[in-house]
Image (cartoon, rainbow, N blue to C red):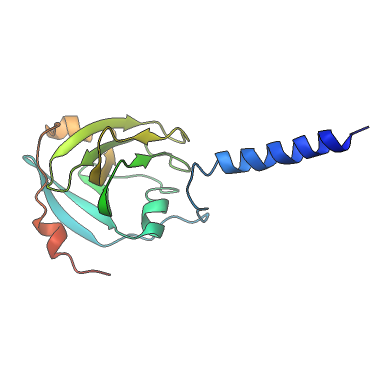
Length: 160
């Protein structure tokens, strides 16, 4: 027979587990982002086409629940100010690589992400952008830490 103390512990544990799955983010719907507006970017000597995730809802959904991502395509997460960003792969089955990019466009860090992982991958320093591409694309395209992203296309893109 359960005691009131046991019942309280079970309810509290369930509450904590439900929070843990959120990793500090708001709940995300069960549908993928619609295809977002795109721009062509120059990153180092490579060119790619990226969807622009500019608001909180678009950034939270990211590439969740998408079936795939072609080489040479990606999603650029744009933030209003520099911060130590953190990304996870909840509901994302596509193997991805991620570049954290500073406000002036320089690549600060490149990491590979694990599909469906809830483990946060935090930027080593404050950055303004995060770019997700198919896993290994940065290496295949010759993009490395220190390369610069041309910001002109982003600045010229019309706001939604």
